[in-house]
Length: 489
Image (tube, rainbow, N blue to C red; front, side):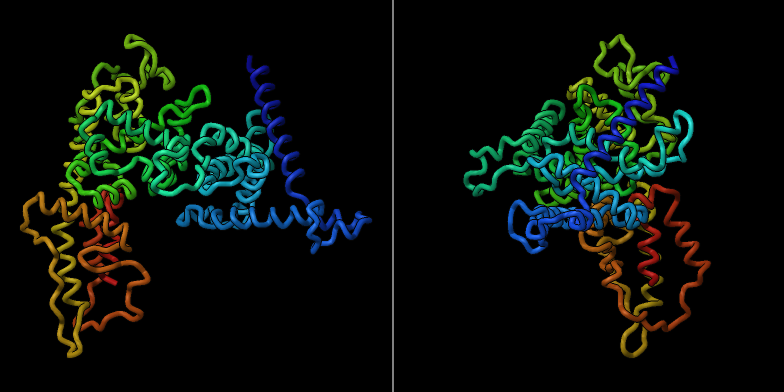
């Protein structure tokens, strides 16, 4: 009943909070307080090299804390929440306690990016103490609850952080390094891709693109680096964790497979360098319009009613309840939620036909995306020409010619697509480069160029921004407004 449920939850929360408080008291020690009550001053000498001295362990712990803080201060640099000293202190303490608790593993780079979303979620949900269920969200125990969640998540991810011994490249394939859990997991990703899309998997193998080159980051960070917004990370984690069973993240492999299938066309036609760039800097997931979603081919043999499903029931027989795959065609569904639903679908089917349908869905959504980008491409040429003529000047004060874009507006659609795709990738890799101009802050001139004519009016720039940014789609596909602003600057 409700009373019993409340009691179970309350007791569990109290137990986890007391456990963390005890661990923190054990591992984070105030030596100055100890020194005031210590009679053996030789033992408490801060300069003592004796291994039995508390200061010896203190100095070793400080090295660990320094390593942790270096990563903590770089956590999601665009998110103001993680720039707060309080948040950084909480993260450093949680990671330090976890590292001391697991001395065989200690701290590994990347753990801070698993903790960060958990801490933010707990902190922002926190309330003042009160009756159940507010007691589970007590603001006084944000640090304790975040540690409990992080420790549970690391139980499922710990093996992926085990590091292999350092060996020479010639012996790497024959050493135990090739059989560490993370390498085995990456190979399993390729095996699953081979089962549903042998053409793409074989192509990657023939190009010597090892799955660990991109898979290690995917697994260790649970794809948190592959999406630009934390909102997307939260949405994906919600579905991955909801689908976890028996202490395993069953959906993670198939999320990776869908990411590969989503970029299938580009990977099949790219060379080694292009494909590695694509896999290390994944393009944003497409955001199809409501009209395109209505025309999207449905996933066969699945119910169309979201009410007919519960999420963990993917492994039930075909006649049983299913995941609400109809959510794929609902405009309110986030791209990462579609990604997770497609991953669950592939895991349940694991056939070439299933992967082909998912690939067709992304091709349709991508075609609509390129139609939008083609319109943007033509508009950007016009904006570039106009702003360049008014901003670029030579020593004589005569306006200089605008730099020609590498592909004219009249180029074939395919040429413009390839050009735009490579531009977006180059912008990511080389400091927001577009049309041969860099919009990165460090590359802008210290003073604005001389203007030989009247600068563009604010109304004109607003008109340009409106033309280049029809909704969130363009912003997610390369920040056209920011690029236009950079060129205007």
